[in-house]
Length: 139
Image (cartoon, rainbow, N blue to C red; front, top):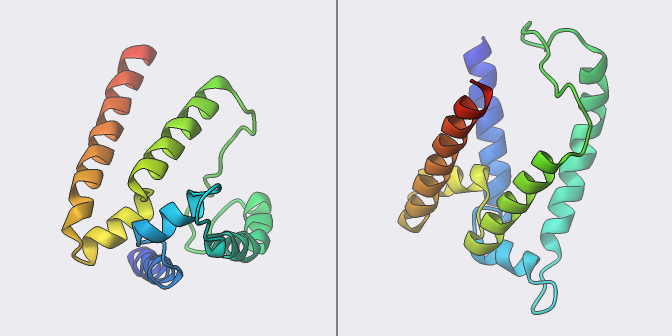
């Protein structure tokens, strides 16, 4: 049952990204171009996502287990620290340069857009570099 829920959730997420245009880097870059030909339509996508997630997040914060029976795993801290800010800046820079963030990049790759392959490889390399860094700093 857990795998079915994961599949349906991923399918809905991917379809939503495609319908919203998030898998199109030109649309994303148009949204990020605040001082040029700004395309505000993705702000509506973000507002819709926040509105859709608001009630389930309120429930999740009070629940001990998810609907599939798994233990609830939410972030334990809300502290804004140097590490969070630095990670957000790196993430934003990658998003602004490539026009992709991880979810839409995987959707575009699965949809057969070969130009996203380099981004996905770089993303995976960055994730691996972070894991290696974490092992060195926590050991």
